[in-house]
Length: 301
Image (cartoon, rainbow, N blue to C red; front, side, top):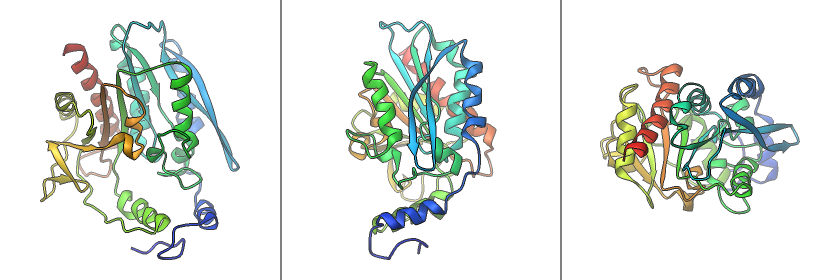
């Protein structure tokens, strides 16, 4: 599939990236949709500003919710949303968990929630940041993405080592119609499109898959929405299933957000908002069910 920016066969240069950026536009408000909700959560959480994204086009304050009465003898649970800003239910699922369910687990855990790691991506409905960098491939030392570097620095500065990390994502039809063609053009590499799974699935870390943990999450979510069936090759997004609704990625090697820490229990959720069987509300509920399913498993194991 051709892409309107760049020269075929050549990776994008700075001018190509500027041309791509010039095509992006604000479609919704991070301040109105996300920041405005934080004050209402201040009774349950300390609302901390952990950084600022500074781009020529705009700057964005970054916020994290930290459970009050933090106790160092409790395990810490980290929930991240909006690493890919266009994946809406990740952002609003994190906020919904903070509002409706988090207090059920405060006796067991310290809880950290970063609801929108990529505000510019949220506003422009983008996978990348303004430099055409994917934050979810940038969680490593000397990260090229401000979004990734900021949350890593916050955890390091506060000596926080999560026991569990649930990273909230979506797989949408635009992965094939826009983002993979853009990636192929940016890198001058072939990126074959794959069938978009119709339903919810998980991406586990191949170095710490914790199969029973992933199973518990799937069982929790299937009460809310359908789990994606595998394709004719028993795969999801071109990757073999390790169990129903679960595939594995090498999290740290790929610079994924779920490789951000050495947490024992990690997973990345993927909902499919374009499914005829789904809705925005269902996708948000599925994200919350994934988090609660994960925490229920840890509490009861």
